[in-house]
Amino acid sequence: MSRLDGLYRRVPALLMARRNLSRNRIRSGLAVLGIIIGVLAIASLGMFGTTLRTGASQQLGEIGNEITVSPNFQEGIEELSERDVDEIRRVVVDSEVVAIRSETGVVSRGQRQTVVTIYGMENPGALYDAADGRVPDRLRQGVLVGSGTAELLDTEPGNTISIEGRTYRITAVLEEEQGISLVNPNNAVVVPIEDVNGTGYSQVVVSSESGQAANESAVAIRESLNEREERVNVFELQAITQGIDQFFGILNTFLIGIGSISLVVAGVSILNVMLMSTIERRQEIGVLRAVGVQRGDVVRMILAEAGLLGVAGGVIGAVLALGAGIALNSFVLNDPVATFQPINFLYIALAVGFGIGTSVLSGLYPAWKAANERPVEALRK
Image (tube, rainbow, N blue to C red):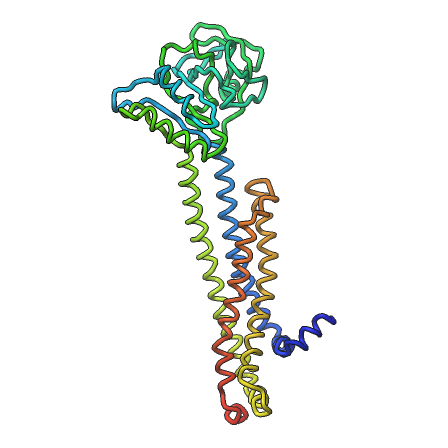
């Protein structure tokens, strides 16, 4: 209390503002409730947009670090040659190059069989991880089975399967691919590259350490392989993530704009509270002006009242918004800690600042009206 007493002595307008607001607790409480709802709406909707973006990023995985190189069929290029792959390996930056041949075939185990995509790769470990078993650095023998295929055939590492009449022992069952992948292994099998017919390659996947490295590799591949003719198409999966980020940026702005409407409504409520308060205290303000209280002091007193309403509503709204964010991330992402991202605290600070600013602006007209009324007129009943 001693700190508050010291603050009141330094800023007497705050003491008067607190006392005036306590005269009509219900009216003041309703004004604070409007600010709470506005702050809660802005901060919660902003954090909701962040949660959606985080969830989308988790679904997409690290596709922004990958690029795919495929033949330019419009120019009559039907496959990538060994020379093309060597050139790609030469020009890429901090990246793994996975050359791929693909075809469709029948895979069977006992009485069970299914049609799957067959990928031939030399180094599948650069793209995939094993859910069961081990993915070798270089696939020389055996086969890797996607999660969907393994479930359909009821198989596991160590079992044998038949692919187009050839028998393979399963080395690993691959992890299920949750995000977007142009070489999705879920309903496929991966075999040594020599076991897929052909001398060329259907596509090359370049997996980089970062999105920047992937972009540099894409530029280098275009400059090298397409120097004389458009031999290849280079698709950067980072373009997908950038588009999604832009979309969620627009969505966040839209959501915050919707939340701001509730604060505008709250501002009108505070304007009404301040006007009613100054009308009811007209004679009191007239007495203050008659005994020498300056116009500026009256303005500061009214604005202090509006500011206190905004601070109270802003603080309570921020606490509720943080709780809402924790609940939202626990439900959607199963990760309540994801709430404590810097961007979310920025939304909360923005909402609180907007709430206090709206409150003070709503008190400007009542403060000006009270300060500029003539004391004689104010004292007249």
